[in-house]
Length: 314
Image (cartoon, rainbow, N blue to C red; front, side):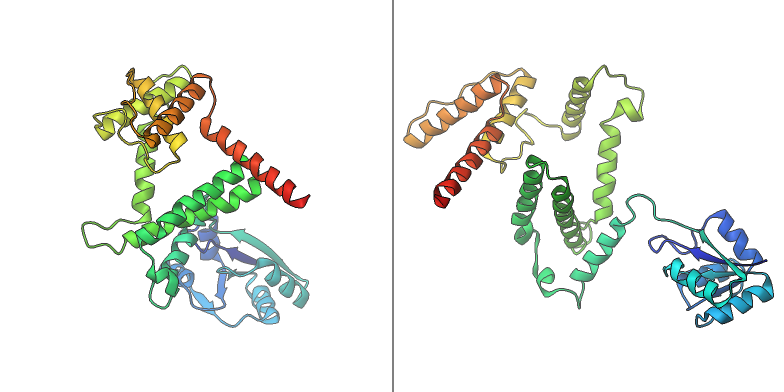
């Protein structure tokens, strides 16, 4: 029986990273490919001969029958099309597919990096080439808010798209940072490495021998480890000041409570300060009642928008 094996490989992994069965078959078969490539070079470097020729179904079927076992390096091509063409040319040839390497989870993040590099490099996109960390700053907030909207709307399909836009901001800022002077530059790999280190360090109950009773203790451990890492002098350090004001107040109150600190606002003087104090007190009261002031005000705003639309229609 003549068997033609179509070797499918990942286009995102180094060409020489193949499975054991793939290498064994490469060593015992007539190997052919449609063009020179990194995969062809890797196979030759491993000691196997590779013949490069234009794909012809009749010719490939004949070679397979002649040798008894042939192997075609797909190198990204569609195996179904090759199989159909060869089988139609000669039904006596059995066509099989062997996956020699495959994409691990997260492999398409490599495509994000490659596309971002193309856009930013000479000959890429003029708009992308003009951007800086400062000009991109509004988009980072905007995309995060749009992802949050999808969450609130329970639109999981929309969330998938919006998270892609958030990921674009991460990739874009990381690509810009690669252009910094030596000693200052960093890349998306540095971002990922820092995240991995943080996750492992702050989950000692998973990656070390720490024992925790519940999720609350996990959270407390996280905060303690963060304080040690950041060497913060105050419970107020590290709070994002540009977040919406109601959420900012709620975060500050939460931090102060965890730190066991009680403090009062300075006496309000002008109308603006008095208004701020009243709003602050409302957030504090909401937190005591277990309510999210930011979410409550947002819901009221959305309800108002719906009422305006209804009034406009009538």
